[in-house]
Image (cartoon, rainbow, N blue to C red; front, side, top):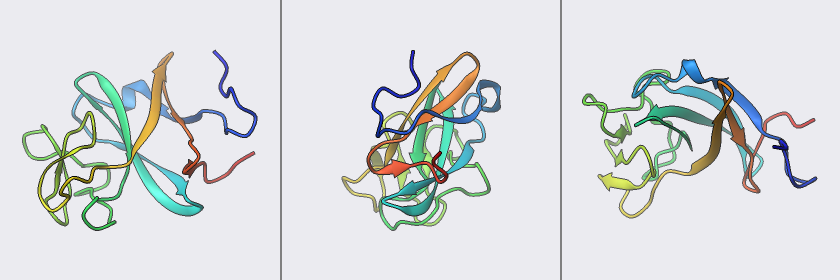
Length: 131
């Protein structure tokens, strides 16, 4: 499978090894550009799936982790903003409760293969350093 199918689209970006993402554990943070502005993103494993989002609360665009890589609530059921208490579904990024209303997290396309996790840049989110 090719890393990139469109010449203008950047190739898949390595995020971490699969074993770095424990089920409902600490997320792995990585840097992206969103609309040419630096932003943090994170990948985590939930119900066996690897998901990734921009590290920005939909209520107020601030980073959400309690401590580096800690995004899940005490029961490890939801992503919760440490600043506002907004609660998101880990698999979809949709707001469950709180000040996020109908907004949700910005989901990033990730894929796990051969023991590694890759992020696929989009039109809106790009690698910090492009070749």
